[in-house]
Image 1 (cartoon, rainbow, N blue to C red):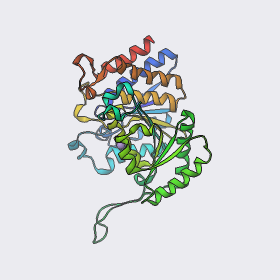
Image 2: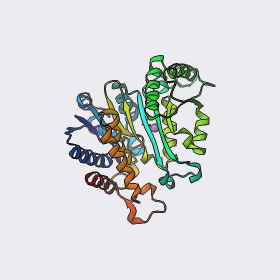
Image 3: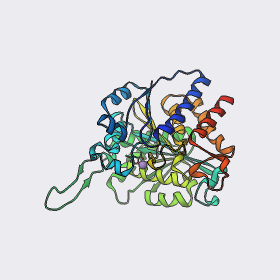
Image 4: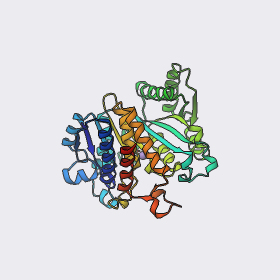
Length: 361
Ligand code: IPM
Ligand code: MN
């Protein structure tokens, strides 16, 4: 069973397209997927009193895999929600913690033929971008101890950043395994010139590296990585390993490099269960207008096939089809610069075209 958490904002409309694509693959390959919908996010706070209600936990616990849309509403509406019930700290982080989804796959893909989507000059894009960013997702500063508010006469706040050997090792293994499988390099991104957690992180990663002599290993400081990512992004083609906070920031930057966060699907994998979600937010400003790009949500279906359901052929079919839509000369609203109006697909138009290609191939 697949738990479906549509989320807020553009969540329901991009999820609808992802489910159409899921259905098309289901029919073509003779699978049978059962879906169970459950409330999650800011809307769930208003309707159920919690952004991650008990009944949703029950559905997710029973599910083999979870499809999650983006969450969050417009600022004024969010301000009505007490801090601990906001969807970030009240739903997303608890979801990650509940299933210990430590490995966050964020592929950054822009074939050379689509270089015009990027705000960078084509000559900076090399032969295209194909980076798999792997972000540690349940450790570090996100989950460390926190102090907030005036606790003494002096006001201050603290966020602890902590990594254990086991936390680093398991995600490093995932990154090296992926690099071995793809026959590419593994780039470790860190801030070891300043942070103790980074020095420790590197020591563990380099220990793991010894078991992968055939995988070229490189280590890059995070500030330099941010710089290189816009000067020479294709130098990262391969697998990049990042701790939680650096991964949050550089994956958004990578979305910018390829032209849109709308091109950033993701999968969050734990020891027993995984879930998939777009790496972007719920874009409440464009919700309900049928103009959001559903690529990230549909790409998340591809990742679900590959990383959660062990269906690599189905996964590849969805990826190929997503690129086929662009290769036919179509685009989505936020990437439309220079395209004639008849080539700009709506949210549902994009989903329909993906389905049509899958059916007829
Ligand atoms: C992401 C998001 C989340 C994060 C937020 C919404 C908690 O930005 O998945 O990248 O910071 O991890
Ligand atoms: Mn983020």
